[in-house]
Length: 340
Image (cartoon, rainbow, N blue to C red; front, side, top):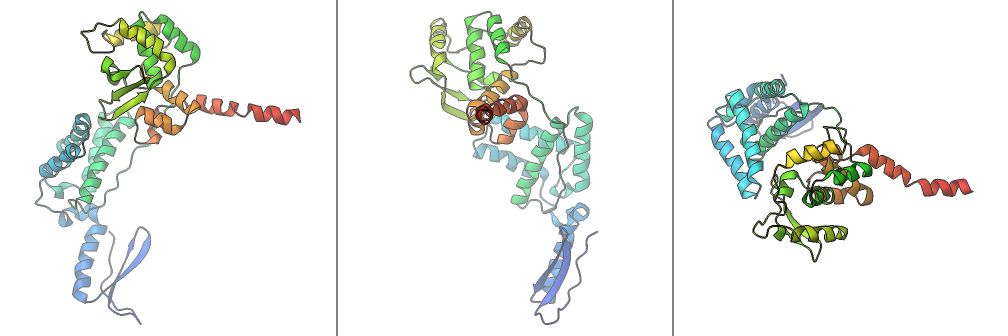
């Protein structure tokens, strides 16, 4: 248990003083009267030992359900997607159900540790556990900013194994295109490669979203609610795209009007001789890796619409292929040095 000294006077210094250790540092603070020093000492003692005395310095009469409702309302006020709000709501409800929290005073370190342990037991992947921990940590930080919680909780993410992503090679992409049963699937695969869109976002595209004159398209992320107006498309795709759009049913606004995407993808993958681990998401990884080769990290992040470039690097980049390509850029320098 961390302690705060009794009020004392320092030689050659005015006022009443207190001292305590916080984050490994010795801290002193002066007060005009002993009464003020004693009041501060009580608050500081409870703060330093929040894992034990959290119920004594939080606001015990505030119901957890009221705070949860206010927190979820922020998603609407900030214009975030309904899916983001639903994900956050599920994470908070898990904590509420597992810990049986009713009031803000019920939140302490022991209960948080029990919640994390329950998620570890229930989930098979540390990455899945970390998602719940990160969402709960965001909620706690919001409580602190709103002065609903004054304690200090130790919430850390679990260690995870490095994620190894592999981009498709040129020959593999050719085999996939060769195995496509229709022009619709050829265009779909090319769209995955040049836009990096998620499956649901691509399937929700309409013909009206594509501007053939300017070689651009408007896309919306169902997961995050982000809208990318005038997303650039390569001009080399336009002849095939124009031919495909002319063949579509005019009464159907969808750009891709066929169904059973997963079934056809599995058939294409098998005919191309690719392993079952090759999912549609691998086309998104390929798009991100190529953009970083010929463009920049910023361009790849912008295209995949991630707010944090670390997500791009960790989950959507074939680092080995990218490093190999960058090293090959040293070939002109090596040839120049060898000539001398």
